[in-house]
Amino acid sequence: MSHIHIDVEKISFAYESGRTILTDVSFHAAENDSIGLIGANGVGKSTLLKLLVGLNLNYEGSIRVMDIPVEKQTLSQVRSRIGYVFQDSDSQLFMTTAYEDIAFAPRNYGLPEDEVKKRVEQALHLTGIEYLRDKQIYKMSGGEKKLVSIATILSMTPDIILMDEPSIALDPRNRRNLIRILNSFEHLKIIASHDLDMILDTCKRTILMSDGKIIRDGATKEILSDRKLLEDNGLELPLCMQGIADKQVKEKPAYIGRRGTGTEE
Image 1 (cartoon, rainbow, N blue to C red):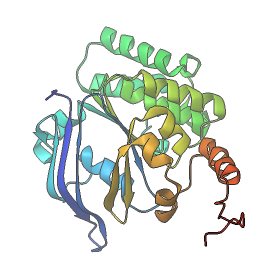
Image 2: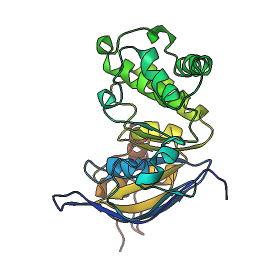
Image 3: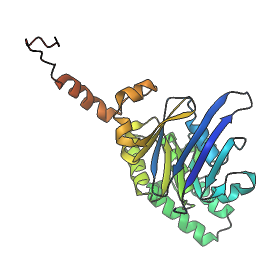
Image 4: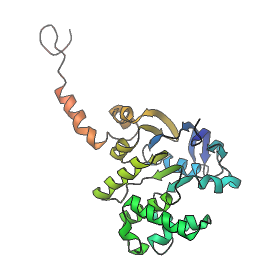
């Protein structure tokens, strides 16, 4: 087994209010997996990602990141290997400029300043936002903040990336840029998103969730082309597939009975 992997076994989680969010969730994610995490609002996608990076710890079951159990005393080890992009960029950015935000984690881990600078410049280049280097965060658009958030995790050269709705607030050009970034990442990635077209473009495997449980885990193309499965779980076909599916329905020949009535006898 590769050293880069995540093992989730029989995870259940409920907030203090007693409302159950996840029930008996299990899966294995290997080094080269690109996994889309999909489902309607409120099914537990964001909560699951937060558990993987240790933002919530009072869960039942077992989570191991590269054989390290996710628990209070191991959080520094786990987070040095995982880059996590929040759904809300304002929850992730807290320094004055893009450069300072991207430099924060490498500095926090004690890297020398020349290495910090090298990593920041590389992250800016990978995300195509060199022009935002010295721009103040509060003056940025939502899409610019999202790309800076992605750069903050790339500066730590993670083995695993987790992203929660990364395409939110991105215009078409930057959405394409995001897809390029995701497809260039060589290791394990898990992306929670309602943007099923992006999942189709970036993930070979998809996990479909409903009511805090895994309903289906398999090949992305197979799951995202199953209209009934998606609609039964509060989703729709990706936009790129909707026209194709409708055309196939229209072109499907009627059954011709022995009298040519179009019905069986």
